[in-house]
Length: 349
Image (cartoon, one colour):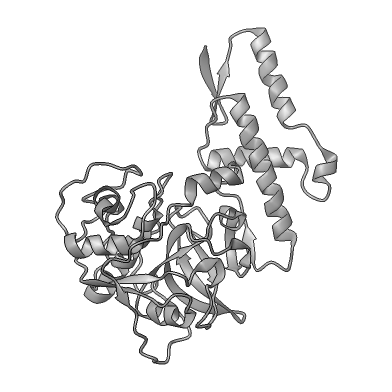
């Protein structure tokens, strides 16, 4: 048996008439029309066109017709939901096609969420509010305190990306120099601080590790999306402490973000995050069962709707160039949309 490449998808192919017939018959079966299910949406041929464009854009390669069929079914189901969502003019955000659109929702949850753990707080101290008046909006990206969006891949290391983002921001604000830090160092070396590499971790544990060991640059200790042996490297960023912002207090979180980027945990295992594209998520449907670490890099108001600017670690092609905006309030007793105010913290340099 040899393999041929068609539209960048790898299919097994037997060099005989019967094999050719089976291949084309199976392909036709994939694109048959179901008029009842698609009434009011797009035709089957348009779904197939979207799927082939999706494969090329995200370099998807499927090694059998069976896998191709499964991925197409997932894609079609997700795209129908995306279309229905975007036709609902009561929604405050849009959905779109991304690298996750050929995954079932259960696959998405298993591969990309569930990697934030709660546990020991280590060396962080409680946040003390100054009570000062706060500016209406802040965006630390505009002030050179946020590195480009990164991609954790299929490794449950979101906590390390959230932590490095907060440390990068604190260092840039204090020292005037933005340095991209090594998530791999945290993945490989911080297990004694309660972190479990690709199986989850806690941003406070990452901060405590850095207080004791310092952080190396990403270029000196590059990311592999897998647990490795802890390597020696030359630390270039030092952290002297960390602060836990008052839980469920969005006003305190707002003040903390006015000082710099803040690590937070959210629930991200919903379809909202699988397909988010733009706008402000104000729905409580995303829940408050924390399972993903991200970074708040600012806040603002749009058409009267207050929001947090959140940097994710699923690459720049996810969401709004790697970011999501989540609804905000000034409540001092509120878990926040997606649980964003439940467990914030930040480092001190």
